[in-house]
Image 1: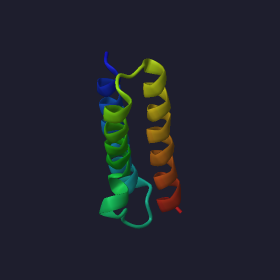
Image 2: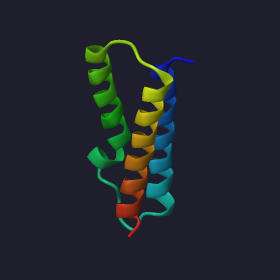
Image 3: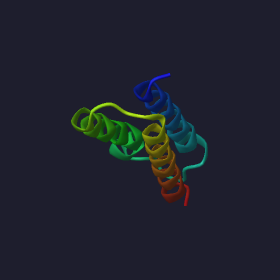
Image 4: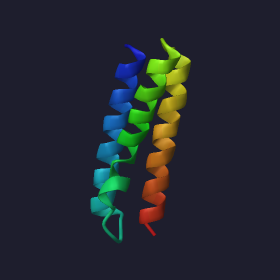
Length: 80
């Protein structure tokens, strides 16, 4: 599986996790811009990928961890 495919799947999972968290865990509604935070991170990946050239699985792991961390941070902030 390519680096781009891995990151797109992780991004989709994070967006779905935020949607579920906003429904069940959040005391207040999550802003639209914040709810799509994983998509903004994926866009940053796409912008840097084009400049840096090809990719590797190691880079995909780093971006995936960043996506999960951003998602967890949004859930943590809005679950309070």
